[in-house]
Image (cartoon, rainbow, N blue to C red; front, side, top):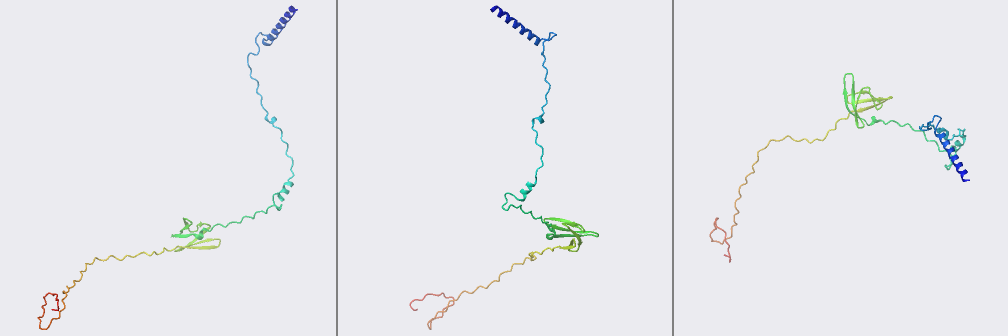
Length: 214
């Protein structure tokens, strides 16, 4: 029994060797698949991966209009009134605050120097500034016109400042001598009463004190 099993295993191993040889060796006796060949590239179709979106169906816009006509969060359920139309703002008339700074006249042309705002501008005759046209230049004035309107600017006069006038320097005068006062005489002593028969006191006698009635 064991002898038959050994022969069966040997026959099976020989069959497996023949199968491996058939897989590895071709008909010419060379080994198969010994060189690697890169596989063919495969492209990815991303459009096929994304699910298709549903088509656009016509929508009933009347519901949206009804929501706008009756807003949900409005207490009156009425749409707000439309804003008033914007009013046309009149352009600022800068010529009303302009100040004439100078004039220049020529044979066939002339002009002015006018201060508008913080800038001085030189305007020739028949030129336009701030929508006004300089139509005439006189001795101390200029006339502007616009749409049948006329406006004149006068050249201001320089104000007279109160300057202090200094008198012309005077020639040096000689010093005046003070008048010499005469020396006053020394005070004279009052004459003392002397009894009759006594000698008259001399003028140069010095006064003396008298005690005891003598």
